[in-house]
Amino acid sequence: MPAITIFAKPNMSSDVTISGLKVLAPPKGWRFTVDVDFDAKIVKSIEKDTILLKEMNEAASKVYKQTCDSIKGKYTAFEKLFQGMVDKGAPKSVIDQNLAGFNKSLDSDREIGQIGARQAIEGVWKKWASKKKEYLMYKIKIGVTIFGAAASLIVSIALMAATPFTGGASAAIGIVGMWKSALTIGKEIVSAAAEIEKSQKVLSTYMKAVEAIAKKGKAAAKANEYSAAFVKQFLGEAQPNIKGCGSQLGTIQQKLTGVEVKAHQCGKTLNGILDAQEKLRVEFMKEVTAKLGKHPSKDAPAQIKLIEARLQTLLNANYTQVQIFLGKTETIHARFKAAEVETEKLEARLKPLMALRGVDNKIIENLLYFVDMPLGALNGNALSTASSDLVQGLVPVASSMAYDKITGVVLDKTLLV
Image (cartoon, rainbow, N blue to C red; front, side):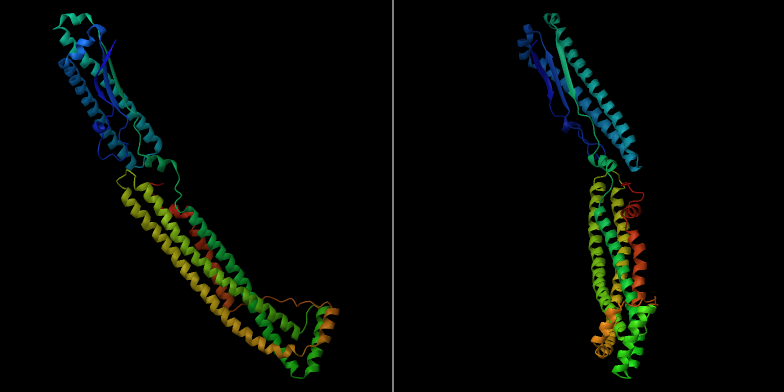
């Protein structure tokens, strides 16, 4: 039978849109169509009967409005329900379960609308056919289509529930790595400082003895060197001698260079932590704002501020520790400069003594496979103490910047955990 479209609304969006939705996505893709198949013998007559068609259209339009009102009513009611669940931090599984229930209720509205539209059109036809008796012998077929896409949640909720928080994670890992690097450098400085101060003490002691012997003359000095070479070879320990003084001075100068280089490295590393800290803050808050900025909970704006304040407090504490250790690094460098001055003084005292050593001393030493004297550990002074202080403080600060600890403190009891 030929069909006539009585009513058509290919896009219902403007008629079912509800303002203020935060949890449920606005309805999209809904359409409403009413077609009537008339017997071929009367269809041409019906096509010209504008009054009949108008009455059928008005009947379908009335059902259409009722359907739209029902859909909007359901959205309003369920939006309030979902809003409450979100504010209370309901798990995603519970929200998904209620979403399925909402879609089921929308399907019910669609079915009721289809039935209602058919009945409304049939009512108009029966009323007109009862007055035009020849129409009673003809049958009509009413087709009503109400199609609606399934309702969904605003994307941000699903994303927040399904994906872990990672904002600033790489920067946090970098910060911990730099703290560890600073700790390693600090340990190297401590070791070097201990060697420097031990060698300075030994050298100072040796110098006094060697200088006393040198005052007796060149022959006495050479004799002491011969004796020292033999004693060390056979007894494993030599009395103070010029060669031993030279060896200790070389150790001091080598270690001093290492301390200076490491102090510079430590300072650069600590300043690098501050740069990484700012990167962490920016990346962390970028994700917080992206997730909570669209979050439907009424608490979301306040939580953004809360999280930002917590993060800033944590970073301020780390910033303070960096400044403290930068100060300690500068103290180490200042004490290095003092140790350097002392070493220069020792070198000036040793230079004339080294001139007393001749080729004969070296020949004897080579024949005896001369080796350095083992040195016992001696107590350090200012440089060593400052270095140890640096290392001991680095460990707890480094551990406090682990990413899981940052997120645990900053995101605790918020919508992002």
